[in-house]
Image (cartoon, rainbow, N blue to C red; front, side, top):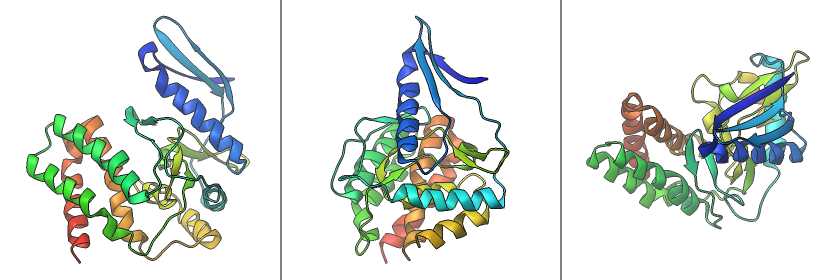
Amino acid sequence: MHFVKSLPATEAARLIAERDGLAALAAAAVLRTPTFLAFDTTATEARLTLEHLELRPLDAAAGARLGTALAQLHRVTGEDYGWLTDNFIGATPQLNTPHASWPHFFGERRLRPQLALAAKNGMDAVLLKKGEAVIERIGGLFISYRPQPSLLHGDLWSGNAGQLPDGTPVVFDPAVYYGDREIDLAMSELFGGFPTSFYAAYRAAWPLDSGYEARKLLYNLYHILNHYNLFGGAYLGQAQRMIEGLLTALKR
């Protein structure tokens, strides 16, 4: 049995990016992913064919296995932050032009494009200016913290992970690039989160830096801004609270 994802032919790049992201994760050989089978297009449609997997939500044991495996994935590193090509976060283009500075990369390749989209989508000019101020002051969260360029899943929320009947954890729908490993941990806490065993196992394999909680707000702002741009004003209040919280933290 196969699992087929289809999009209009004009959006074929999204499926190509997903295929390439799955290949990158599979090549690391630490996480189970759906096996790529085929990619084809017609005049109107693009199709990505993967193996069909019988998945269920993560239980405590599978969550722990995933936490350990994710720490192993993050040990795979690149020379710079970014990726060989741009890809997508959901339906939004994600810029991956490599850069040697992580604060610069995250500010210019992640937050600034989302704020530009938010301006087009009607975000208040005062809030946009505050968002720009976060970018300008972002270095304050990295004074003594220099993350490795770790291979990331990039879109690691609970809807993009599950387990097989034998308890093997599986991840899918990636948005891969090299970046701070805290990115994956931060997003995993959005939208329901993972089993507590996942976090305990990850920290046992590779403890987190003491500044993670402050940077988690920064990293998840990217995803909340993206949700605002994709789905509308329901996320505006959350984005505003996060921006205000970051500005407060950066003034200390």
